[in-house]
Length: 310
Image 1 (cartoon, one colour):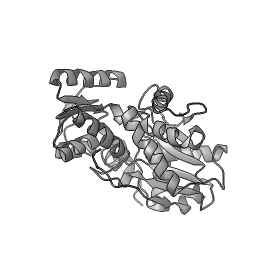
Image 2: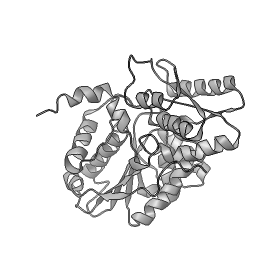
Image 3: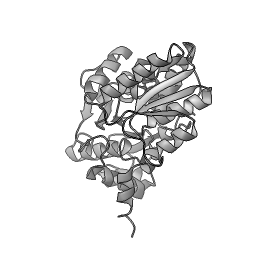
Image 4: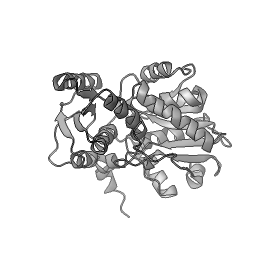
């Protein structure tokens, strides 16, 4: 398997954030998968190491994947292609912007070819990527949406074991859920009771996707914990609880989250504490899945930032 990241990622205490949430100062830790490396890091690095290796072993010279315009997964696929000497084509939702920002800027730097699909839903986006692979022929390989097939999700089964060595008494591991592979892998190794997923609105069927991947990994699906209350008006929106979560992390721990994934994960954790699903004295780990370039590429976040000046 290609070595595309730096392991294990650190686990850091977050005492001021814990107290602000209503926990004890020793309760909350942050698993820093944003520090994995390879093109600004994030959870997609673990997945692409497996999925790209599998593609190369099948003889691929071109990787094709898909996602939203500011997709972290697409950016990491582009970076992996550059590292491995492979061509990369990204089938992205939306229209080409006048100037690339955030992840789009990095996609261009890594040399990926971008294909814009217009405002289509996720299943259509996935179908367009499959069609592009067929057009390119046998040396092209499809990297699944979000890197989330059984091969990619297995990377987070490994990450779960890594986490257990660092925080063996973890009662809750909180993670944003997009395409489902990260949560599925964690559940496969940690069990459903320990993993609290927070839906981001990336797909219409997150629970079904997570459960299907867990079955493929041989893990338990009973009792899955998935909050769906932080989606707001949709995946690309920036709801008030998420804005509050970003400020809280930044101003208590100097920790930068993104408006789509980690911001929603922290907002979901805050709601879980208020409702008593996560309680004082229970060791809790927030999985930081990266996404900083997406924050820098979000017009909503940029507009919001202008209101923060003292």
